[in-house]
Amino acid sequence: MLPSPERYAEMLDGAGAGGYAFPAINVTSSQTLNAAMRGFAEADSDGIVQITVGGARYLGGDALAGARALAALGHELAGRYGVAIALHTDHCPPEHVDEFLRPLLAASRERVTRGEPPLFHSHMFDGSTLPLDENLRVSAELLAQCRELGLLLEIECGVVGGEEDGITGGGDPERLYTTPDDLLRVAEALGTGERGRYLLAATFGNVHGFTVKGQVELRPQILADGQRALERVRPGARFDYVFHGSSGSSPEELRAAVANGVVKVNLDSEAQYAFTRGAAEHLSAHYESGGKQAYDPRAWGAAAEAGMAARVAAACEQLGSAGRSIMRS
Ligand SMILES: [Zn+2]
Image 1 (cartoon, rainbow, N blue to C red):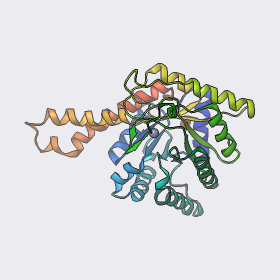
Image 2: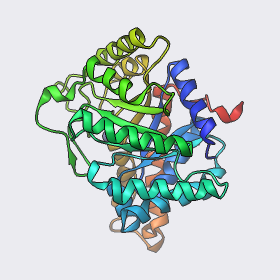
Image 3: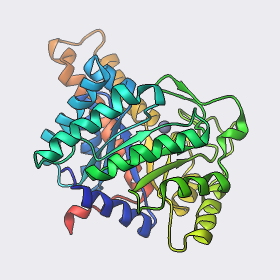
Image 4: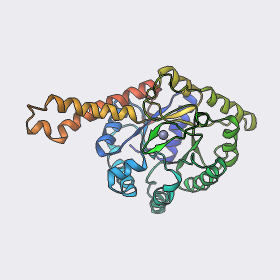
């Protein structure tokens, strides 16, 4: 089911206090949405499904229509599953805020005014291409709007390397590592919850796509340093971190990140691989001899969805969210 805004906050509180994290699975279609939801249910885990601007454009032909359509599918279908599934939009760069993020906030505002739940549970604004001051100025303005609607905002501080959805993280390797000073500037500009809750994609050497071992060094210590710096200026406050680009990370790296306050771990490349591999295996097995039934998109689709659902369930086990759905309590 879709959690209420209060239950979504409870999910994240539970992860922060319990030392686990939720997989956030990128989806681009009803098939991948169903696969993600099924994976969460199989693991008895709550979770997050998300769509990028490009994913939404693929789904709907137009990004805004696609995002609204994904939300509509989620509102219709999530009730079939006994776990809490939150709807999120992933990376929205500054140039798409006016045509994507703001209209989605307006749609949620209309719904909330009618007494309905908002369209999405949270949105990401990715201002990492802007100077930090400007990034935080826009983030603060969007956070205020999200707060009014009971939504959470995800922001990015630092630059995630690699490529996702046509967005490439810049060339300077040091920019892949944020600093405690920058994290404190985030807390100064956005508060620590009193001005609205936000999720923080703080970068610590993470890269979108399959990380090639040895090419990039993850430094989860940066996350710990940020928490310590925050504790000094705001005792009791904690950052809710997001880990982007988890594909290819080792179990130890994931554990270290979660131990330092990561509550949301984005999983895209590995889920895409699991989905496509399921389809490829089915289609190559039936390439010559396949009858009409083997080529029915429902046949290869079922194989693809089963593969992706299994990968999502495995992510829940690995991140510790399996067996802990708040819908049981
Ligand atoms: Zn990302």
